[in-house]
Length: 618
View 1 (tube, rainbow, N blue to C red):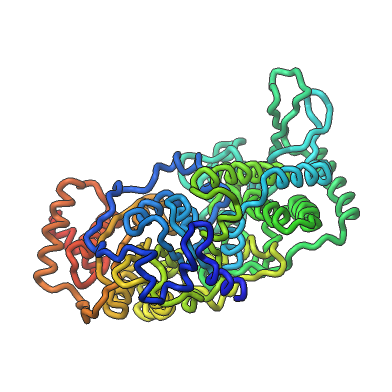
View 2 (cartoon, helix red, strand yellow):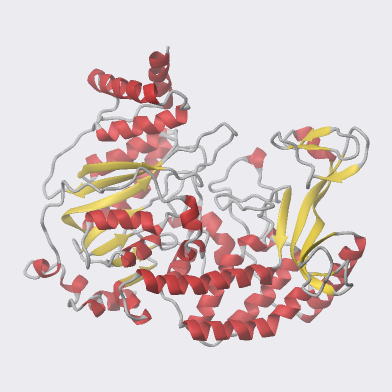
């Protein structure tokens, strides 16, 4: 708190302005810092969708940490540019991995970003406040000299061409099944068919569907190593540098011997003991995600990777320079998911826990070095996108807080724009997922009691929607308190539930008396938890509101009036006429857009939408 108060006294920083947040509540000084013209009719000139995926993947600042359902900072920047001016102060009360801070810097705005999650706070601080690059690279080289060979030794395989031992970069693992057709065992790896969860026995061609409960009894081994890939630069064979080798008994025996040797050498290293938390949100008893209840975070890693991570983490924690140690720990934390059993063969799901039947386990050092290189490049990019001259200036333009979002240490009516990407009910259990990383931060933990979350698939329960609203109301109210009259707040939101949508609208219009300004939908495919291949992910919506300078006493309807139904039906009919192949979920997104744009009083239920669509198509 002392750090926060100090910041509030010094926020003027390198901009040349004096004490912005400490003087903002003085009526005599407000106009010195802000243009209070009415921006109520300003509508952002934005495209219909977020940035192309390939553009994001080439952005090192975006890629440096894979936070669940992260928003691309350049998309946020477009809203900041539309609804604020250079030098203004932007607030994000639930900032996640810091995208709003980057967007603010990118557009010449100051920012106060906050998150109650230990991981989110750690990630954002390390993203925004870079260490000196030369010192960071020097420390990395020392770390590599000290620990890389010891880690690589745990992954050694004998090259089939030259006979030398080389460290494997990745090891493919697979469940092993017994075929009920011929009785032979076989790995699922490389035996998948075109049908979901269906594999073919390579011995007799019999197919088995692993999602069928009875078939699971045919599994004889869980996640057995089957293939190792490595590089051998000394070989002159036709394979070139890249090689692969089946993991047979000899390879397994060599790995086991090395593992025992290094476990003896490093037998007192610390590893976290935190148990995985999932049942606050992920409540499906019949669909437990591939590991036992009561498992620890470290149980999501192989024995070899668990030891390698302990060795690497211990070496990082011995570094004396606080900034350098924190940045290297950031690269370490960012590498964890791709060092774990949560990986599929080429990808990883960040929005729920899952240990797949077939996956890839990577060499801990290989992943860490790759993440470190991305981090260094992101440091260079951070300097390119900001108007600031030195890293020290960043502390004057951005402050990263870990506070209760309903009680921020900011003066009343002190910020110019609010961007908020709140929890959508039961879509993502952020704190539960974040524990996978923050368990390695030792002194930090996730405050589960403070998280805004309801159990999965309870969105349509009016009582749970009400509970969600009760948790969100003080946060939205605090954001309103901090926002100047006449200024804007943009929410990035979606939900599968009309109950959640109507609760949000009740909060924004009836409770908080905001004025609706604009709605822009956007594809966002990584957040929604779908159940079938035919499921269509809902779109997110950027919804902008304005803080009224007077009261309006808005009251929303509990259902659509006949006149509103006619407006909705007419517009939806026009939409279906030009989008005849859209599924119900896609049409539901359009209904929500129409409700907002036409200022209708209620978001209809899924059944009501089905009835309207059926009457149109009938």
